[in-house]
Image 1: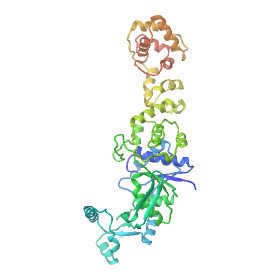
Image 2 (image 1 turned 135 degrees about the horizontal axis):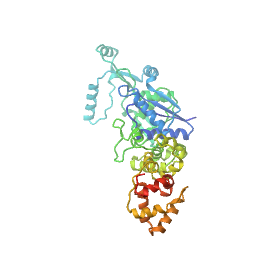
Image 3 (image 1 turned 180 degrees about the horizontal axis):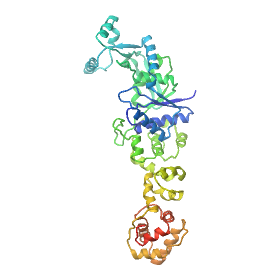
Length: 447
């Protein structure tokens, strides 16, 4: 049987690296098993869901290369949820309740004060037809709860191992609100049944939901999928991530921090696993290395410094043909592989290439430490054409003319030619700077 997984965010904010880790693991699992990846928007929270956030999630997934095989939007499926709810009502598993939020709050507080778990007492099941008619005549609208059976609920989790819940100590969940709208606990199960989802890979904050939803699957006459609950990602300080707070959002990492998509993929694919975290240039490499069984139960922490290291490494490994269009879009007219190969070992962000484009193609104010030494250097500057051997030949000539060597030889030349103390190897930069510009800079001219 072919596998099918889903990533089902709510479009109520910008997705963060914790959300994307789950999307990536699902995507890698689908590709590794030759399965199907569904992108589903759980947008029944109409007060907070927006098209802007939905578009942003799609943009983030596309940027990361996590393309989907199927797409669904829960707000398009209300008639199907009504149909499923009607079937559960007819079977007696979905029953109406009339307590107000204040009444439920008092019940919970009373149970907690007695040291008892805040489980719904099923008072609504004791109402007569006359009771319900009277309450509805008063303007009360029911919410609907799913009646759990008092049997053990067990499954073998692909991350957590054997999991056990007692149905008798779980509270009947609300599946439909007073306004008639279905809640996630129901809609998610209906979708997973209808889209033939075989594996549900999600955060460990859903473990209790899973226990309830397994019984809903069974009540619908379906076999529950296989579950895997991953430990939730935290920031470096151990704090949880939040869409509402914009914690480490994918959009900010891309647009504000200049992070490469494969740097983020490389990190998130290996966080919390036994594999070393290494830079990978393609998702195919991550697919080949992926094994859900390597994910441990410990809490993984997102380290921004590790991401920065990977980002630099990705750029150092990336060939020119993969960035040519992006460099051109940054305004580098006539950019070529020689420039990219010269500067990429010194980049941490693609945007950093601007500095070295300016050094090789725009006026630079040279830093002059010893004008006399630089005049000697200019006097032995070779004629063009120049290549990667020119720097060595020239510095040997300067050494012979001045007696200088080491830092005393190389640093004044670098500062005059680039206006900087550090940077790419000058054997690579010098042919890009060109003889005319180099000569003027050695003479102290801005060129």
